[in-house]
Length: 245
Ligand SMILES: [Cu+2]
Image (cartoon, rainbow, N blue to C red; front, side):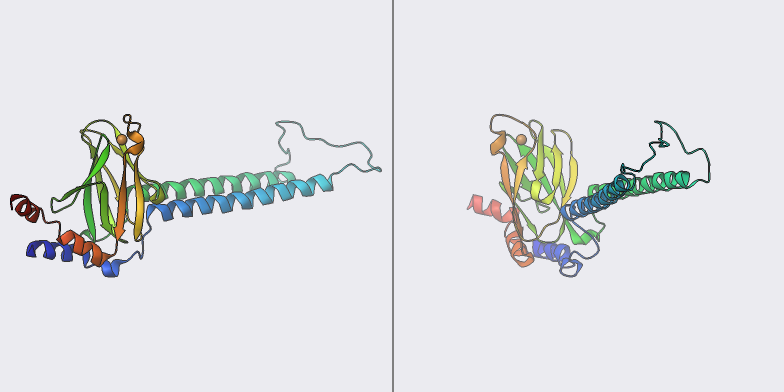
């Protein structure tokens, strides 16, 4: 019992200060990526449509028009390299390329980050092993305690999650937290979770049998003190004693 307390303290004490400074959970990253793409998309859309409307108005048909219009043909490029038209073409192409490349690099960096998780000190994170089966989820903690149906973790903590299956292909996912990992027999997938206090729905996202839709569990994100208290009470040795007694 004493050893467990020590371990829990060693694992969770630094978190009181670590908080969430300097790193983001998946849902925050995805929201940021979405916001940036939406903002740039709206900005580009407004500029393009406004410029188009401006030209539609500027080059509108008028009664005193001579009828002689120097129309552009498909595939035609401005012949004079230093003409106003060619500059405009170059600027719009270069600007589009820069915007697209920046967005690609930004989104890919965010994806790499989401896959790897934030780098925190080793003792500032914990590990939970998840095993899927027809039809439910088992959660195994570092002290050997196994629980079905409810996964308990402390709030705002980086929880490294390894996922496997004991029978068929499943998929471990928490929509609200944008967390998803394959649950495949003989293989181990890795992901991570960090969340605010509250309850979240864990679902199976791989059609795995007739009760697939009932293959749910609860992620209970607890206050640190509350979690520590619960975790201290899960010493497997105690459980054995209880079983024997
Ligand atoms: Cu399943």
